[in-house]
Length: 183
Ligand code: ATP
Ligand code: MG
Image (tube, rainbow, N blue to C red):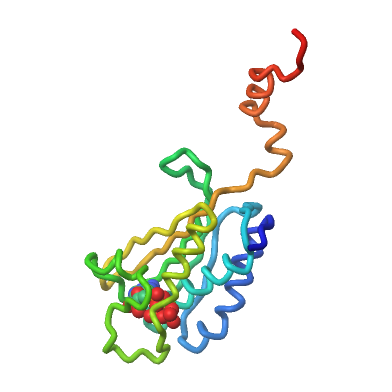
């Protein structure tokens, strides 16, 4: 895969522009918020595919006149890593607790009989899960039936070079290691 530094603002902007026509068709509003300037390392095309899947689901499983929001923020995960968390939130039908793990399985759909205009094969979230894992990140889900869902894609942050230079911990490491030789 092609690894590159990916600007999260531009990534989300692209995903929102892809979502514009489906959102208009479903009469769903799109919004986004969060700090700018966050960056991750990865395959931009795959990350965009993952976001497209999450946003398309949010639109497909929500009623008309509801809002789908895409927010980004910096969080520290359980291992102490700084992660960029991109959360896609809808006020849609939600997912029952018993199905919340299973939606990430290939071909799993909560209600196969429900004839949604969108159709679908049940692969979208399996792809999102793979993209997260391939980027050393993870996907998490909060959902409540009748209230809505939030899918959060977390990817390790790339620290800008200037912040790296200014970081005391990096300076400490370089003196601790005493790589200057001789003495
Ligand atoms: P496709 O392969 O076209 O994405 P799909 O949307 O059915 O088809 P997934 O994206 O993998 O497949 O989602 C699996 C199932 O999880 C969906 O069929 C739906 O039942 C449920 N689901 C996914 N996202 C949401 C959401 N935002 N709100 C409610 N249910 C959802
Ligand atoms: Mg889908």
